[in-house]
Every structure is written in structure tokens, then in C-alpha cells.
Length: 175
Image 1 (tube, rainbow, N blue to C red):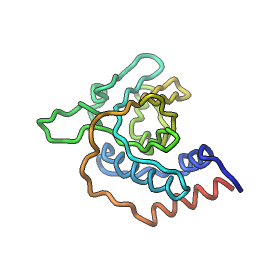
Image 2 (spheres, rainbow, N blue to C red; image 1 turned 90 degrees about the vertical axis):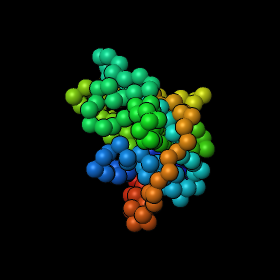
Image 3 (cartoon, rainbow, N blue to C red; image 1 turned 30 degrees about the vertical axis):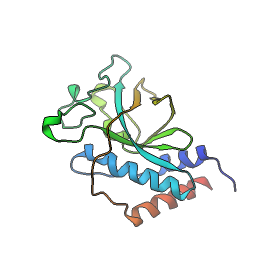
Image 4 (spheres, rainbow, N blue to C red; image 1 turned 120 degrees about the vertical axis):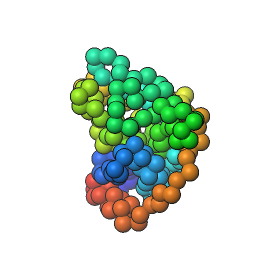
């Protein structure tokens, strides 16, 4: 059976189970690493990238590039939400494929139902000129823009059992 990159990406997105941490803001780094590793197993070259995010609901734009914390007090932020003085890494990490498809396996962590923003667990969107846009069924819009910020130092590793379970689910979905 021959499948396209788009079908493989759709199967990976549909079968992803989010990585959860006590502070959900930290889930983007391992999620991006799993995306790169999972795509590689299917022969799709990808790499991790740092992005800025703007999120809007159907009624009013709640965020712009540079901050998502203005409407959220639970410690989830984005680029420039923290100052250099804090020493904290500021950014969100995603995977980008060889065919310029942005994959965010931590997208669900940005859901804010109280603001009519309900996002799926994972998002895939074409990346054009450094920008990817995803539109939801309730009028939500997520815009990703490549951000000139190096990835943070981290100690996240790929757990073989987690990766293999995901790959097995994706392969089953492709049948």
C-alpha cells in the first residue's frame, strides 16, 4: 500500500495522545521531539522549530504575536511573555516537515473554552513564507510564525514504548 505524506501526517495527528506535565506549557518540547521522531519512522524528514503564536476566537482577537498570557493566568505563555531577566525560555516548539507542513502536537494545551477557543490535541497546517494558519470549527484561528529564538536546552528524551505505541496506532489508521 502506498500512502502520501499528507495521509501519514493525518494519521499521526489523529492518533497522537498528548504528553502531560504538571505545567502544560512544558509539553511542546517533547511533543516536537516526538513529532520529528515519528515522522522519521515513516520516512518524512522534519526538524523542530520555535514559533510565535497568535490565537483568536470568532468574536474578538484575544491575543496577538508576542503574548498569549494577557487572558490567561495559569502560567501558559508564549514568546516575549517572560523577560530575559527571568532567565526563562520564551517560545513554543513545533515540528516542520521537508514539505513545509507545521505540526503542533501540543496545540490542545492552548484551548480556552471559556474564551470560545477549543483546539484539537494536535494541528497540522501548511507553512508558507514562515507562517502557518489553522482555522477551527467554532471560528478559532491559530497563526504560527517562525520565531528567531534558539530552542532551549532540555533533558527530554524519546521513550521507545510511547513512540512505538503511537506508530502502531498510526499504522493501524493507515490500513
